[in-house]
Image (cartoon, rainbow, N blue to C red; front, side, top):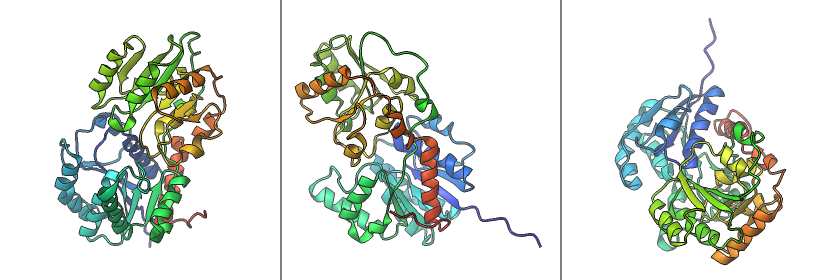
Length: 381
């Protein structure tokens, strides 16, 4: 009698929509990686209408993608109205593991599994922005923590973006300290790690930022500081798109920077731009682990960044040519930009970025998933 084929774990990756955010690009990479590791993978997308839907679905190799609705103007409303369909879908697909790919789908995924009665399915949560050191305050912060404490009771593992974030989470949720496991997100492509094809321009320094044009990113800080940069031949390029475009363009005009600051929009591939830039600057209020910082490092482009994510100091302290922003006031930040532009270009940042390459990131997640499914022993540390 022939032996039964080995069981292929069924994995459901759950996301809100294919937006411009890095978490959705990571979800596409992971879907391919889990499938290549011998798993039966599907992507469950709550809403159609993501800004880069066509681009990201082109990047998944024969992975079934199921949409449960269309995006509205409110993410909260999207989560509520698609919840019954998510429950029905999970009941039908019966995954061995359901992975919430971002903070914004954690509660919906957790409750949908419970309502579907899938108590044996592994619930895995990927963090995208800090939970323990959240920007929320007062009642909102308390409710947020209580909500996570509730669903952590049903969770097999919480995949954080860094060891620093895991430490924060253990301190904030000591009852669940064994859940937190840091993984390397797959951010950096082989093209980003490859040597630059072209020599950088001999004249005119370029400051670059890669960020969604949203309030979180505080690009107004960067533009205000750039107006005070001493090198008036330098230029600032901001790659990204979002609802703050009109306000940022108005600020550029008001400061008389039309000829020196450009906002070309969203770029699917930023490797060439980062290779040709002289300094990368990120001025966000908060982040999880910003892909753009690691992508800049892959190009050996020095990084100047606010202390906006748990691993910021660990990643940037001592990294050649990189620094944390010590003061976001325009004059002080301008001085740090001036210093960054005057310094020689680093040569050793690429080795740091390589830890977050697509290949290494997928390996990290496959090991974490197999561990949760009982295929591999739990890693120490």
